[in-house]
Image (tube, rainbow, N blue to C red; front, side):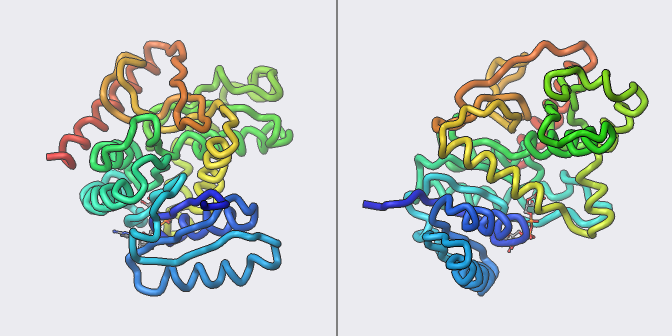
Length: 309
Ligand code: APR
């Protein structure tokens, strides 16, 4: 019988390998690191194996190009695909990543049909939907990582501006993982105290704008997309599942009826535990917020139809 949990990481690029490093550092699980690039997952796995005695991490790390090695994974994280280059929107990636994700989902489902699957590849909401449909997974088992990251970006800006601990800031960002995301200022608190006690409206508006374009800001400066914060976000979701924490977080979850939307993945607050997405939490939205959410859902549906046809 297998002694430890197992996580397969599909894509051993910046995000995949950073997740692998965090998993090893925290001895969370055995890792299968898979990529199509010859030598990349094998080399990184070997490097991580060398790091494991320093951390006292008794976990196995395997670099591979073969899906057999992902068999019986408890969690699969999909970061395979191409990233945004400067001037490219997430949607530009659509057709290239869709082809990759369909293939990845089918292969993952073949060896681990009951795994929880966290999708990171962009455009996020569409790729998560594609993973669910192409892999034939249970809807509660598949989710997209976006809300944790978008909320963390929002929180980091609030903490800096208010000059308080990042640990005390609580934020909710829902909607699509793109420039139409909806950072909800009225749900932002600093240790339960409304953020408006600390920051004025203008400052908060600036922060909301910066949060919306935070991914693009990094691409502009770094010339590739972010990876430390996405990887850290994924690991917090892995822990919520492994330790059945029932964390209240936002992620791209399957919606059927909630928020007046049907049959798509979009960012909503959920309870995340050992059963995956255990509950979608429906918040009261203003007319403006509702209209942005529905418009974003329309765009996601159009993109889904394009990649599914
Ligand atoms: N199967 C497995 N791996 C693949 C495949 C495939 N079919 N196609 C591409 N890859 C691998 C690439 O070889 C590369 O190593 O996916 C990896 C992606 O890594 P990076 O280019 O470093 O990208 P990363 O920063 O990790 O982002 C991954 O997450 O946030 C999103 O937009 C981002 O879609 C991108 C994804």
